[in-house]
Structure formats: C-alpha cells, structure tokens
Image 1 (tube, rainbow, N blue to C red):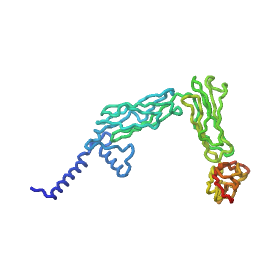
Image 2 (cartoon, rainbow, N blue to C red; image 1 turned 90 degrees about the horizontal axis):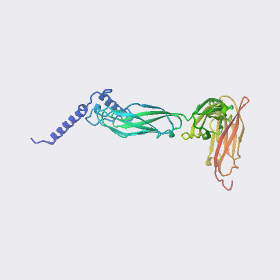
Image 3 (cartoon, rainbow, N blue to C red; image 1 turned 180 degrees about the vertical axis):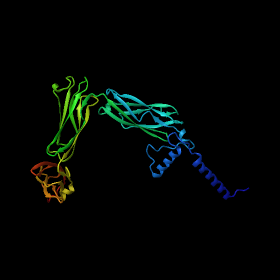
Image 4 (cartoon, one colour; image 1 turned 45 degrees about the vertical axis):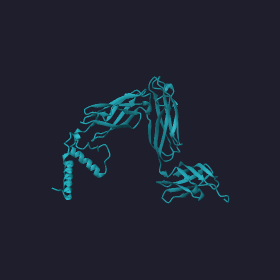
Length: 388
C-alpha cells in the first residue's frame, strides 16, 4: 500500500504521543526511604513554577531512566565539627568523612571555605557507591585573631537531592594570655558626665607576655586609650604579669552612639594585635542632626550656608557659638519645629581659596545645665574674580 503524506503525519503524531506517555509514566520512580520520588519531583516542579530553583533543598534530577534511589547520595559524619581545644603553636589537622550511601558514583565537584585559616582538602573526589573518603581540614592558628573560631566549609557534588552540604568547623586554642572582655558595652552614658572602661590582661603561662602599644583603628577624637603594666604586688600570681587598658570617653562626647575600635599590640607572635571595641550610648534630651558639615565650591560661590539643626524634647538655648578658625562663620536662629534651633554655617568672605577644615563649638543650655557640642567643618573655596 502506498503511504500518503497524511498517513505519515498520523504515524509521527502517534509515535510522539507514545514517547510523551513513556516520559510521564514509564520513568516514574519508586519511593525513597525518606521522601517519595514523586513528592521530590513534584517539589522541584513547584520550585520551578515559583521561579525559586536555587538553594540546598533543590537538587539535580538524575539521568533519564535512572531512579533516584539508584543515584549517588552524599552524607557527612557531622554538620558541626567541634575540634575542641588545640595548641596555637602550629597548624592542626583534623578530618571528617564523606560517605556515598547511594548506588552510583559520587563526584565531588568543588569544596570551599569561608576563611583560608580553615582549609579543606580531598585526595579523591570520585567516590564509588558504598565507600567513604576523608576531608582533611587544616586549621592555621596564626590566621585567627583570638582563641575561638567557627568557619564554614561547603561541599558540592552530583547528589541529585543534596548537591550542597555545609559543615561548620569550630575550634578553640590554648590561650597565650587572658583578657576579661574584648567587646565592652557601657550602655547609657549621661551627656556631660563621660565614662571609662578598663580591660584586664593576664599572662597565661611561663612564656613572657607584654602589651607593647595601642593601634587606633576607628576611634573618635573624644575617646582616649592608654595602657599600663600593673605593679607586681597587684598580680594574682607573682609569675604571671598583668596589664590594664583604660578607655576614657570625654565629657564632650556628642549625643548618640559611641564606638571605639582599636588593636592592643602584644609581643605574642601569633597575636601581635588583638582587636577590641568599646561601645556606649550618650543619652540626652536633644539630638544634633549632623556632626560633619561640608560646603562645596558651588555653595561657597553662591554664598549659601549649611544648616545644623538641634531638636529637643524641652525648651533650651544655644550660646557661645564659635569657629576655631576665621574661615567659617555661623548664625543662630529658631527652628520651625517646637524646641528646635538651627545654626547656619557658611564660609567667611575673608577665606582664601583652597581646602578648609575646622570645628564649630557651641553650648546647649537647659535649666542652668550646659552641654558642650561641636561639629567638624570642611569647605572647598574657589578662586574669586579679580573684581571681588
């Protein structure tokens, strides 16, 4: 019988229908020990429909015709590896095991770390079904600032259900010296009273310990930091030296949050500098909306000023407004809001061209109590016309 073109089209359509029926029903997988394959595939379809196909919970489908239970399965001995306490003198090596509990070859595509101080390494990245492979983890104490560390290792594989596994690696080090508090919280500081914090350091063993200096990394000018070695008669142990770091916050500290970040420098090879921070909140009845004023060349040329607004929850006055240089001038006026005052700051007509810096100081008075405040001043003064 001679086939006509319409017969050929019908045959092709029938073959395509058979193929789609096979794809939809013939390759359906059997239930897994934890989650049925149908439920897993349905969850993937829901993720795809919602546009969210990223993340650890969405895996890769196995090759066509391969059931999920016959795919590779990556498992690790723990998701939180607590190494315990180790010596800080040299690198320390530990390990965890990666197991392939599936029925196909497990391939480790990559492994990463959040810090080179905790570095993973695998000799074999192709793990047959039923076998295990150690992940060697090298911890470098010299790259860790302090005595406690938690870093994360991420392993990527061809496991269709869990292609990404994250492991937290926690370790502690035997201390070379003790410090009572590296993150000091002073809480509320009353405006005009100032505050201070004392941080205590103690030698931990027979190896000599000394504080050699202070490095100010982010410390405002109204915070002073010093240190001293305590006299031997004040040491708890006559063979273990003790030091004290004193942080003083001035009475002139502005209202709002205070933060002083600094490094304590030591003679310890692994910890030549130890990061510390002191925080507090200077509390008062008013706020100053800015502590830095910058005036551009255009604003200077146009004779414009920049406002600083003080707002309070009760009446107050502003007095003794003065600039430490003659390059700036200021005028005080009442604000539009209740209990507010505005200081308009501009560049003096006498200021010479170039970059200018200074400080404006003023006093806020409320019911006889005075509060000193200041703002930093910066300006760029353009060249003036010869006629001016």
